[in-house]
Image 1 (cartoon, rainbow, N blue to C red):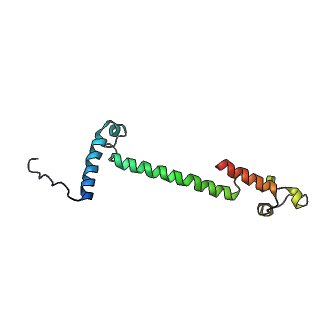
Image 2: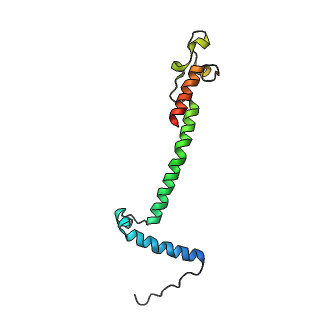
Length: 120
């Protein structure tokens, strides 16, 4: 062990930042928090886990509104067999294609509007 050469401290900004990050990571991994999350056992570091958590959180923040928007455009749980106004179609229950694209069908529009509001 005495033969090991001590490395010179980094001179660039990025080198110092990386070295500081490495030292802080080592301290945090060996701390109570690191032991609680078993960082050494899982061969990971505190900052690696922190970055992974941030990525997961931001992914969920993106997915929830996007999926809601996609579902709301489909009409969601509104069923054309139940939510179309037969009076607009001569008293006959219309096919789903007619109901979905008829701007005068207020029953269908109300169902879709309620579904969109529930997703918000």
